[in-house]
Length: 338
Image 1 (cartoon, helix red, strand yellow):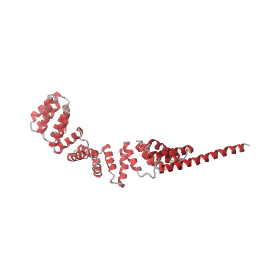
Image 2 (image 1 turned 135 degrees about the vertical axis):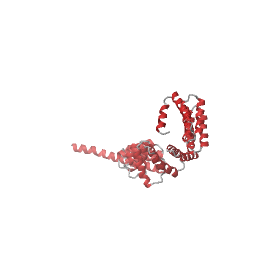
Image 3 (image 1 turned 120 degrees about the vertical axis):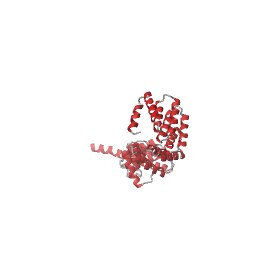
C-alpha cells in the first residue's frame, strides 16, 4: 500500500517540475527574442519569469544580467551574474562580467580573485595589476605590469602606472624614465607632465623640470599658485631668473602674508651663488619685520660668502641671540662645510 501512495505522490511532482521547466524555457525564449530586438526592459521581465519558474536556471540569470547591463542597471546585473557564479563556478561568461563589475565597484580583492580564475578575460592581467595598485601593493602591481609591458610595451596607461608604483615605493630616479616614456606615448596628459616635473625638481634636474611644467601648462594643466610656485623656483634654479622671479613675486602679491616665498627666493639665489640678489629679499623681510631672525641669519651667511666674514658672523650671532634654535642651523652648515 505504501508503494502505491508513493507512486501517486511522485508522479504529480515530476509532472509539475516538467511543466515549470517548460514554462521557464518558454519565458527564456521570449526574453531572448526581446533582447535581440533591443527591448531590454521587456526582455528582463521575461527572464525574471523564467527564473521564477526555474530558480536554478543559470542561463536565465546570465541573460538577465546582460539585459541589465544594457540598461546600465549595474547593481541588478551584478546580482544576476553573481547568482550564475554561485550556480556554476566554472561559468566563464559570468566570471568575465564580474571581474569588470567588481573592479568598477572598487572591490579590488574580489576582482583579483575572479580575474585569476577567468580563462577568457582578455584584460585579466591588467585588472589584477591595477587592482594591486589601488590596494597600494606597489611591488605586486609593478611586477604584474612589467609582465604585461613585455607583450605590450607601448601601453601608455600601464607605463604611467609603473612610474607611479616606483615613485610610491620611493624609487624616484627609477620612476623618471617610465614617466618620460608615458608622456611620449600619450602627450595629452597634463597631469603626467606635471608629476614628471615634480620628480625632475626633486632630483635637481631643474631645466628638465621647467620643460615638463611648461608642457603641462601648454596641455591645459591649471596654473594655480602652487603650480606657478613650483615652476617659478625651477626657473630660478635653472637660470631663468627673470621668468622665475616674475612668477614668484606675483604669488607673493596674491599672498602678501606668506613670507616664506621671499625667504625661499633668498635661499634659491644663495644656492646659485647670487648673493646680492639673495640679500635683496633678506632686506625685504627685515623691512617687514626687523626682528625676523631667520632673515638676519640668511643675510649674515650672504655677507660671509661675499667675503665680509666679520660682518656676516656678527649678523649670524645676533640672529642666534634672537632665536637660539638657529644655532642648530649654524652647526649643520659647519658640518656640511658651508
